[in-house]
Amino acid sequence: MRRRNSLYIFTIPALLVLALFFIHPVLLTLDMSFTSYKGIGEAKDVGWRNYDRIFSRERYYSEIWLTLWYTVIVVTALTILGLFFAAMLHRLPLIRNFARAALYTPAMMSFVVVGYVWQFLYSPLNGGINVALRDLGLGALEQNWLGDPALAIYSVAFTQIWMFTGFTCAIFLAGFAGIPEEINEAGRLEGANSWQRFRYLELPLLGPAITVSVTLTTIGTLRTFELPFILTKGGPDGATRLLSIEIIDNLFGQYKFGFASALSIIMLIIVLTVAFVQNKILRDREDVS
Amino acid sequence: MSDLTQTLPQVKSGPDWVLIRKRTRSFIAHAFVLTLVAIMLLPLFYMVMMSFKTSTEIAQDPLGLPESLYWGNYMAALSSMGYVRSVLNSIGITISVIVVVVLTGAMAAYPLARMNNRISKTIVMVMALGLATPNFVTITPIYVIFRDLGLLDSYLGIVLAFAALKLPLAVFFYTGFIAAIPMDLEEAAKLDNCNSWQIFWHVIRPLLAPVTATLSLFIMIMVWNDFIYPLLLLTDKSKLTVMIAVYKFVGNTGIDPTKLFPAAVLGSLPLLIMFVAFQRKIMAGATAGAVK
Image 1 (cartoon, rainbow over the protein chains, first blue to last red):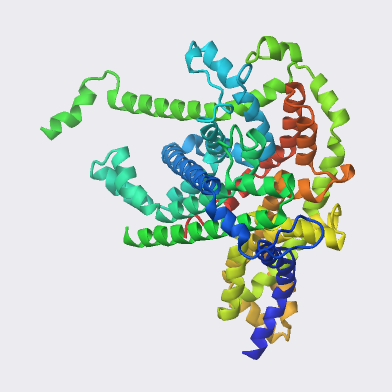
Image 2: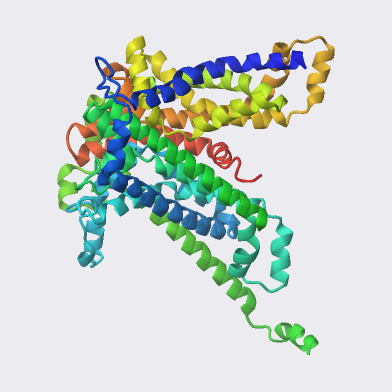
């Protein structure tokens, strides 16, 4: 047994890297969140003042709600669209691999590139979407997609959904591939149509795939930063100011390192809580069905 | 009655309606899904198309196809965005991160795969936390630490920062894989008086190639596409990665489509070529864990 424990020596290089560039930074964030550190000079201890400020102002609550709302929209759409495409492609083996790769292509691209291209697509005058609407005789539907505060958050969400539909589709296709063929065969003999087989035979068996897909897209979406940063910079009028944008703006726009750290800690707690609770609920659901 | 219905189609030697209906339905389903996929790809088509249009064409006919393939936008972009240099930087950083992550990740995974006690569980916990933590939670302190250590603007710094980001994923990949390697192989080596390191290096490591390949592709995608780390940790113009080159090139000028689109294509092209070449490997890795 003693000899075996010496094996843990092998973990030292990895733990060293993580200690230096993950654990230490997280602890430092926690430490800085109780100071008014501005990036240079002395870090003055301010106790809980940064947190008091966050919890006493309406705007931070609304940014947290916006972040959660944005995540709900994106994750719901990604799950439904991914399931839809996967269910269709599972039934169409001829085009399955091609379509899966084609749908996945946007997920291979950088947020920077996707952000810029969609910023131009959304632009009010010569942007692709408005011009296409005009050409189709639907000029009445033209919008200032990113400039209208009521619309901007949905435009950003739409882009993110476009980007990752192929990702959830690929996960669900892997789930479908794990369903034994006999089950569907039995369903077909019982006279179940395509929709019934999906609803009553396949969907319950996709539990693990749903858990993975929802967990990964939730964590990924909660920490979305690059897309709104490129598309709207949090505007117009703070309509797309997600918690992540608020953090980056405090950091590198205003050099409020201390305050940004407090926001980061709140963010970390939200991400970990959501991921934990969600995983627990989804796993329990899997066991029942 | 049943005899009658069964022989009916043969008596009526006309078209087989059941088969035709089935074929038509299948054709419609294929066409429907392919149309949807094509719609999803429209923005990419738009990006490539726009990159070949002159500024007058873009202004006069924003959605039309280009008259001819106009390479001028690409010439201008290539000559001023520092593209080749940034590609070399990204490749160099990618390779270094892969070496660090693969080596330390595989080593750490070996004991975690072979032992299941409190130490293992604690380490796995830390890894899971690392996977879930948004990287801008750690970016401030990393910036401060790097500044104090003089690692800002150095390749070493950014390589280690990226390595820490992908290490947890590597450990999970390798742990799962090593756990599936039969113990018999190790027992045989032990009888030959190999120590733990020799077993790891000569027995386990050679078997890890498939995981290493997948992992390397993931690291490449991340290093290529990541935005925030290189934006904040590298400022020297000669050290920029591809995406920062794209960001600076496009961002400095407002939205000028003759710059935006060629830069977007150039920025995505190498990775898209890799994707076409290694599509199966990338898709398999992306969905690992979806099925228990």
